[in-house]
Image 1 (cartoon, rainbow, N blue to C red):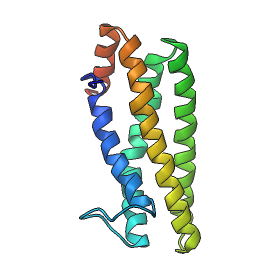
Image 2: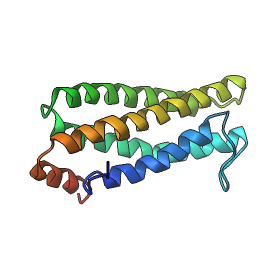
Image 3: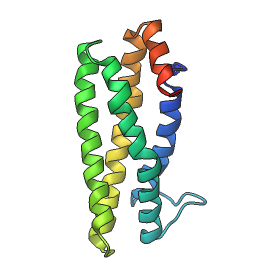
Image 4: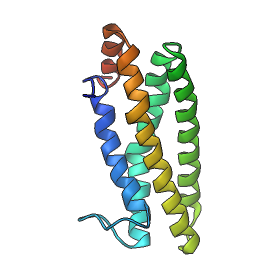
Length: 150
């Protein structure tokens, strides 16, 4: 299904976060122009998290989710799951920030974080956004579009 214009900015950000997930995972080919060593991948991930992913999750929680709460039971259920995912992602990044030593555990942790981010983005894109497009009124979609103009 084509993404509604109101959700397109979220989807564009999600694309960047899917690339982040691939950079973090250990069993994927290297991306051209992306860091390939553990320290470089970790620094890249922390930069994306601090400057784009964390603000994106905060925007969803403070502006998008409240607009959608109560619209449909399945949307409400997914909101709870997505908020839990955000908390888990935050915890993993906090651990990464506090880990000054690079070890095999760091590689495993980064791989797990990449998988969590990928699963989270896929859930938003494939289920959450589809439900929003199916149940939101044009007026509500206009309100969602307004989130990005603030």
